[in-house]
Image 1 (cartoon, one colour):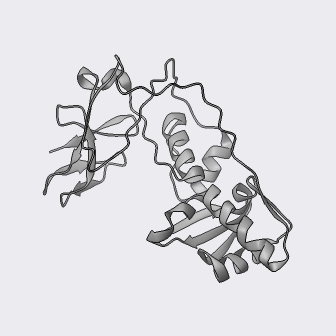
Image 2 (tube, rainbow, N blue to C red):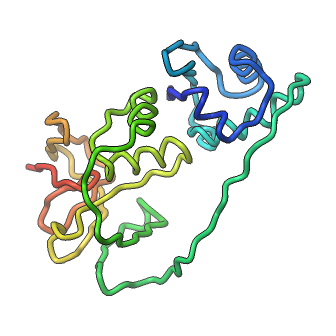
Length: 215
């Protein structure tokens, strides 16, 4: 799996005196392989090969954490900026506003939160730039922030339009062989079976807040 990660994004979490070339060289020697470095007007972008046994490095923060352990071995200053984790959320097993039918064998942990009074708009410039540099097409503020979190922290996040979820039911199940879907970019796919899909009980699949066609 190849990731595209901007150098300036990594350096938000990694305080180091290593140059871009040194970061690429030393990481490749001891950790995830940086296949190439591309120069853009907004800085360098690393193309990083992450193997399936190192999913902990499949994010901006994961690469920064890896670099903070590797670079000092080569006499380079490297300090990881710790994430601030402040949350007032209280997790409960059931809520009034949403019903769920989750296949726990496919997804052992499924959490949801309802956010009210959201207005669709264009994302800030820096978010659009970083997503584009990471190979992801910006769509709107709701979709983009979920993709931004995924890139930064390695945690997949999906957003849904609550008012359009039939009976406020979310079903997470295994796809059927031959099931057809049309995604947000109007591409048609035939699922081979065994994929994780989320629907609302009517057979409508969902992806980042919008219904997508299924047949």
